[in-house]
Amino acid sequence: MRFLTKEDLYHCVQKYPVSDPAFRVWTLMFGEHKSKQIGEGIEFKEFRPYEPGEDTMGIDVEASTRLGEPMVREDLSEEKVRYAIVFDYSASLYHYGLREASLIAIGSCAISATASKDAVRIIVLGGATPYISSAIYTVDDVIASLFEIWDLPKPESGRPTTLEECSNESSRLLKLSNTRILFVSDFQFKDVRAVYDRKKEKFEIVGREILQQAVGGTHASGGQSVELAFLGISPVWDDFLGLRGLVRFEDSEDGSRGFVRFTKRKAKKFVAEQYERETVWQESTRSFGVPMSWVHAGEPESIIRELEQGFM
Image (cartoon, rainbow, N blue to C red; front, side, top):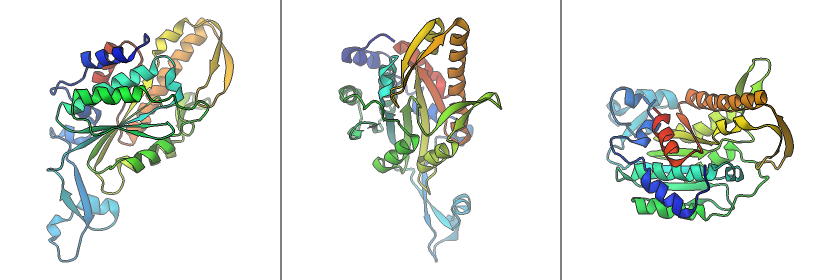
C-alpha cells in the first residue's frame, strides 16, 4: 500500500464505505450463526435464575442444561444492539501498510454499523492507556474517531502482545451484554500462534486452550448475549515473491533481529506458509463458533472488496 496521510484516510473511508443497508458487514460477520440459516436476524437474549413460584413455562431448557440450573429467558428484543470494534494496536502494524489498512477496515465497518442507526464504539488496546471512543452515530463521528486513533503514539516496540491480555482487557472495558464485537488484529501473539509441526507436516495453533478461553470470555460468558468475529490484517504476501539474497529482519514484538537468505524457491515457500497460517487461524476460530476473515494491505478498494467477501 502506498503511504497514506490523514487526508487520504478521510477520502478513502468516504469513497469506499461498506454502508449499503442491503449489504451489512455486521450481518455477514456472523453469517455462520444459526439465525441466518433460518432466515431471521440474530436473536439476542439473556437468562436469569428461576425463582420458586414463577411460571415454569418461562424456563429455557437449553440454557438450563448448559448452566446447570433452571434459567428463565429475558427477552431483549426491544433493547438496541451495541456494536464494538476492538483494535489490537501493536508496533508491528507500522510495517507494510498494516496500520493504514487497519484504519480503513475499521472506518468502513463502523460506517456500516451507523447505517442502521445503531451506536458503535471503537476501543484501542496496546497503548499506555486504552482509547475508548464516545458513541459513534454518524460518518462524521467515524472520521473524528479515526483521526484520534491516527494521532495515538506508536506502541512500545519489544513488548510482546498476548491474546489473553487482549481478551481480559476487552472484557474489563466493554459491557458485553447484547453486543456485537469485531476484534481487529494482525494476530501476531506470543501466547497463541500458528506453528509448523514437522511430524504432522502441517501448521497447527499453539496455545489453542488460550484461544478457547479468550473466545469463551466474551463469546459465551454465562448468559450474556454476545456475537464475536475476528478480522486479521496482513501484508500483501505476493509482494514477497520477488525477495532475493540476504534480507534483514527485526521483530517489532520481541525485538529480535536477524537475516534470512531468499531464493526464488524460498520466497515462494515463505508466501505459501503465510497463507497456510491464515487458514489455520480461520479454521481454529471457527471451530469455536467465531467467524474470521483476513484483509491484506493493498489499495483501499481491494481492502473493501476483501471485507465484502470475507465473511460470506
